[in-house]
Image 1 (cartoon, rainbow, N blue to C red):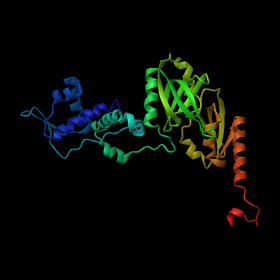
Image 2: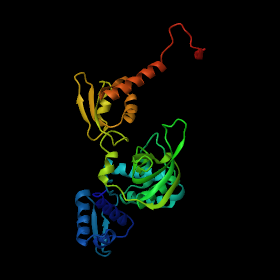
Image 3: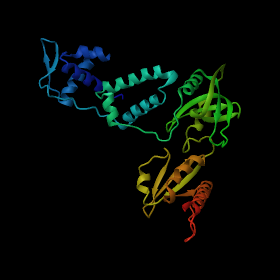
Image 4: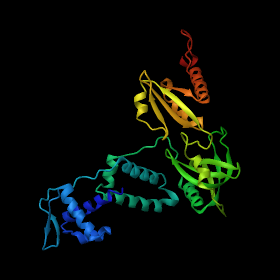
Length: 335
């Protein structure tokens, strides 16, 4: 909120006047650690930019308002700034219990104070704005704390891990070198060098059990080695070679897709019938396949062939699942 720090000065000066404290340039300078000259320019800017009816009272060596009905214009936060506050508070609330509650509470108070300093009380902020991450799995504090400790202290991290791909729900012991903790759509994901698999793996914190931070340290790998596992292609699954995906959306669905950003390197191209072609890089089919299936017949994969084949297989399975019985034949389950 860099440019809005100036507004914090306006807000403080305004509140001092309303409390009858007759603020002046030296007081403003002392409050915000700026020069008296800068403070004087701030006061002048209140007159010019916000039409503040300031009046200097020599007997009190400070300012008041000629018209006490005057209201300082509200702060205009950008959507990026609003989202930053929402995201920060959301992350804090996800980890506000158990072992790290005191540290989280302290950070949350500081964040709320920053909002208040800009003329927007936390209660009103929560009434006006919100952010939702549906379908996410919050990380328990007893997992989050040792994971971040191992990450910050560059220590080996051991835990039992269960993957949803294992239909039996078995846990497997892992010993990893943690390099990066990513918050992805509400989930905390640890990127680490797995000593069992001798390669880079991503682990969702909510699937971990029995965490242990080792006393043994490790030398982190260079950033250029692990960064490709975080960015480049669509979705959470990265690291492999990328392919170009081309998806055709129907004219009925195109207006919604135009509004969305699926990937920083995406390209959009209108089709003659009013539809839309979306082109973006993919390295793994799992996540984008689930994303495309939600659009049903409004989305058709033109490339790559492998992704198109997977969507076709899934569509065939759905057709079989929802196949209607022959006309006149009563399904037993429907009796």
